[in-house]
Amino acid sequence: MHKRSYSKLLDKVPPSGIRKFFDLVMGQKGIISLGVGEPDFMTPWVIRERAIQVLEKGTTSYSSNQGIPELCVSIQKYMEKRFNCSYDPKTEMIITNGVSEGMDIVLRALLNPGDDVLIPEPSYVCYSPLTVLTGANVVSVPTHDSDFVLDANVLESSITKNSKVLILSSPSNPTGRIIPKEQLIEIAKVVVKHDLWVVSDEIYAELSFDDEYVSFASLPGMKERTLLLNGFSKAWAMTGWRLGYVCGPQDVILRALKIHQYSALCAPTISQFAGVVALDETATEVEQMVQSYKERRNFMVKRFSDIDLFLPHPDGAFYCFPSIKSTGLTAEDFALGLLQEHNVAVVPGTAFGQGGDGHIRCCYATSMKQLEEALDKISKFVKKVRK
Amino acid sequence: MKLEKQILDLLKKDSRLSHKEISVRLGSNETKISALIKKLEDDGVIARYSIIVNEDNHEDGREKVRALIEVQVKPEGGLGFENVAKRVSQFPNVVDHYLLSGTYDFLIVVEGDHIQEVSSFVSGKLSSIENIKGTVTHFILKKYKVNGAILDQNDSSSRLLVSP
Image (cartoon, rainbow over all chains, first blue to last red; front, side, top):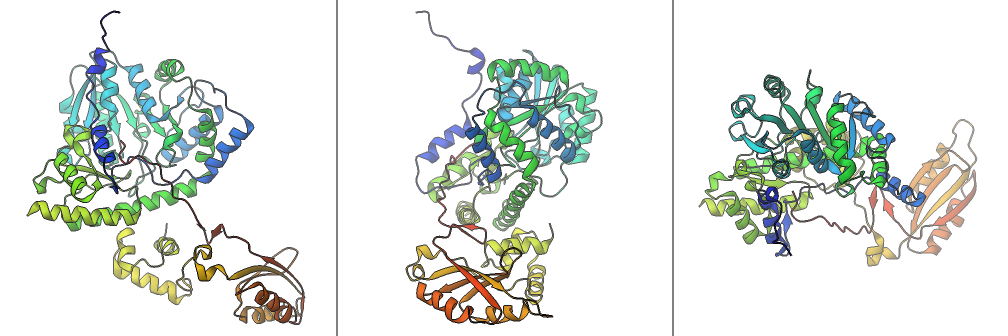
């Protein structure tokens, strides 16, 4: 037997910071968790009912690689009506196994070893590893000095001669921040000037609480350069259904489809049929869920202000990312102390890249009762460590 | 969504919320919320604050009996159903009372301590009202959902405690 060796690229991917914390939390009982990254609602009933019908009827075979035509048409209509983005359902989209797969196949379709990918940090956990696996390099773009909203000037100063792709994520996991339209326009100028592709992760777009959401692809001239990723996990509470989509220029879509057809074949057919109902029939349910997140967001803003921890305004998603620097603790020590002394789980900001140090991610997609209890405990903990 | 509607949605789910809590959740101020709630009460939009009881889980409540009763009424000239409706609504046993379209006219919900109480209410009181032509009584065997609240829901959340 020859000497074992493994993927060298994979060895460049560090172990997950979330995983480490997960193991700690699982060892303890009676936890109040603000550490989850998914909704606390069940998938709306009409969507589940459709899936049951599909199962009863036995429509359980593969779909075409691209996805079922009905869903592509529903996505076309939804994108046009909701975000003013127009895509051809036959040639400009792929239904994927969630946004994560979308991110993977798009990066693989665009990148060569040696290319640079600009990633505003802190960022969602998959961007950097999926970039590394293509052989491309990660170039972190700090957002800390602009309260975690990507600044076009900082972006410009981070550009290298090999810069090829910019990953945007707004609303952001972990910060809950949304890049406002004026700033997106400035970013678009940098994108044109340096001839970049943009991969825009808009999975939390529906969860925008204060202003009308602006999709990056809807800006003039950006559709041709943007791969737009979206899906059903968050606004429709469908995380386990694994359903998302990529929209973009035909030449990239064709290439990404090549990867998708070999590595995934198709997104789950049952989920795809249910997805049609989600887009066509559940506007009221989505509106109610968004309202409920917004109420909890308001509660979090008030409580962190009372505790006197600086909180960059959480415009969307269901996360807030308060600074715990005033306590003198690192993010990891704060999260660990809070867990051990008060049984409250939050995720240290460092799990989302070095740009997240000094902050913790608190997910408020949990009951008001639990939030109240958790914030009381955070308040106690902060008072104690500040002494 | 209008602020009044948002307030009502919150109170419908939890009528014990304080004005302060409501103001925090809606990102408004307490004085404004209190004024709006007072107006909703004065205008009769908020008729009263109540609770939803799942009698199946409550020993004393378990013995109470409820029935839905279809009532056929002969409308009176000039008055329609109003005169009869007023008389029916007055009985303390009548919990809810609706005028419906379709094959019968009133649907009333009647509550009593036992089956006999409901039966004697129907035969002795309801049926003897002038212009009531007939009744059909359906006893409620089990409640699954009341005023939008699913009773006896097992909250079996299977979310991971920490996830990206």
